[in-house]
Length: 312
Length: 226
Image (cartoon, rainbow over all chains, first blue to last red; front, side):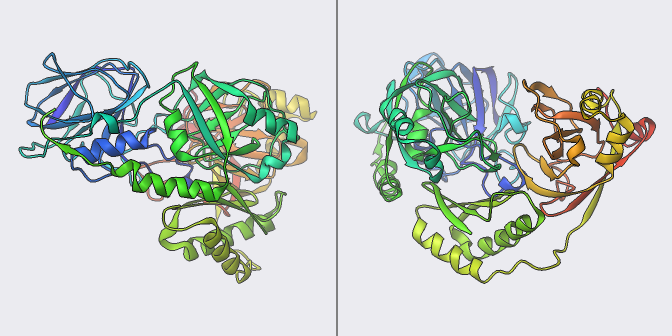
């Protein structure tokens, strides 16, 4: 019982909530870039929160269902159709064996999450099914989905058809303020450089992937060229000698030696991964207390919006 | 010891800013102690040359609590005088056909190739850190005479098993990857095998020695010169 990949799209990856506790082997986290959309995909389907779904970047995925089940697509607005009939995102949809599920290209944003009832049944590697292509680990063969792949999933006959009200769905724009917790290495950037960093607008460059987003804008100079190689946290903002910031994300290397001006708040780094090249980013410093409050608020409100019931 | 905030869920503990075995032993002892004291609040730890990155669950605890626990436990941790460690011997086929920078590195060092091999294989190295890519072990320190800076332009693809030098560090590339280190030979032992238990032949704190082997021996051990 499975779904068959008819068209693989630009980049489609099996992801659960990520691989944790394996940094000491040099393994990265992987996992969904937009955690909020991934969360709602599983929540709407009444799955456990870490269930394996497909992260679709840009779009173009086409699947044939070989089972009767329920599906849900959340995240960037990519047109969804079942047997040519247009369906809503952020809503549980019924599919039957033989149905063709087609996902078009994003009208805004760039990542969406496709889930099935109970998630795809994928063998975990190092405790997770998350695909990290760079490491050749996770997913089906450590690789993105390919035409002909069979994605195992179960037959499901009863699910509530939840949907998220339009007013509660996130909007994907092309400008974003990224809140930054300044790190202690900030002292290697003098006041002028810090002011320039927090006062300028940066553009998302073409060199953005699951490892990190490279930004383009005013050059930020650092007093030092590097530090003794050390662990790198999610969202760390590195400044290599060319002075162009790189925000490190899910598939980042675990250790590195470039100086860091701080780390992006995870909520904002996740939103940044919905930006396409050319979008604008502005950085704003916050304290770590404010950061923790923001995380708690997100947990209490953003991820717990009420679900509506009915056919969408 | 210094504790520094590096992100919403991250604290860095620094034990110095130099590469030496004593600092590394402190890092190792601290890593186990922090793991023990953090319990369920811990997400992951990244030990490196002179620091440990602590990643915790920010919905369960906060910086102040983590910092207090880490200070408490580390004030009671003493670095054992004799650290128990294993010695791992890795076979290496040193030759220009296996490491394309061997000749240029020898020329730069003003030494015959055989002397470069003797110096590299004649020393014992400590595993200081594992990271960058799965199974990539940072080993130190190579003899100053064969230390060499990274390439100005990194290669797009370094063959799997390549034995390499960058400054006074040396390493074996566990898989095909981009890289800017100087390649001097090739090791037929897999440095990362997800299906093996353990999946790596070395761990942080281990001692590594390289043993020169012939081309035939390299191929017999499953080495690949592609």
